[in-house]
Length: 371
Image (cartoon, one colour):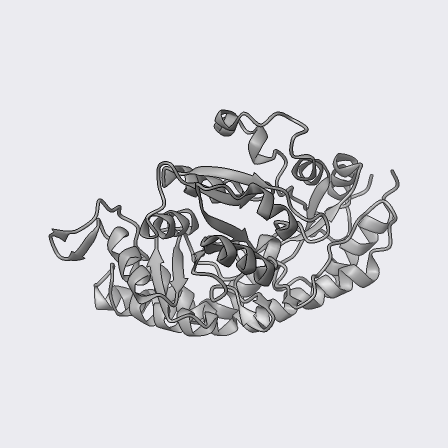
């Protein structure tokens, strides 16, 4: 087959980096000039700005998105003997956080249309040991938070948002990060709001929870050399905070561009072998991932690769079938929806700065696929 006239990588940071180059370089120079690298003015400024952006009272920076969830669980006093409900269809970090807190993850199946946890299945998973529900806003779309909150309130449970893929997403006009008792964000470079390395944060409107999360992430310390908890070292460094402060004012515009690309995909892809993603009522999707499903997923993947279109799979092996979670004792077939998504999901290119020609090349390549 001849070389495709247009290649489309699965993701590229270059268009965004070219636009923000001067600001990013100035941020680096400012941090270097200040000669202060942990818990300084850059961190404080970003935390305040991101809390305002999310509609939360507090933001506490930390090392990454996994740490954010672990810190929330520990700050809530969730640990050995407790259960936490999580989606069966998510990145493993969501479940690892529960394990690292010492609690037991209870996997609940998703809806096939949105890929998010199905509130109608949560009630049956609640036991006397259940302490919290982690609602993952997967691929950039918020879970059904009203229904989840209703169940949580009926059983006295905490609601934790895993908002690692949902920077700027909204549910009924409210942004992710303000919809639960607390939210964990990742600023991994590939996120809609990404640092230039690992970084994360916790948002909440509970002052006591914010204070405890901050202490737990700083060796359990509320003052220098005074340790009130057995904490850990997970802080947002000044350099990453400075980079994030450069990017945050552009987040809404970049998310709008993702929505425009997604709308073109949805209008242009017309292949009966390919199931397009759905947007739930009351949601504003930010399209961290544009996930389609296809029964012949691997053949579609090869077809697109041959035409210069990069893809990815989110996620090819469900958590209950990973070796790390053999201990759960969940056999193949027990969580069929998670298994179906894992076997059929394929993620198409989605990033700020895609050209019109690249978007059309993806559409044409998908439409030319035949099972």
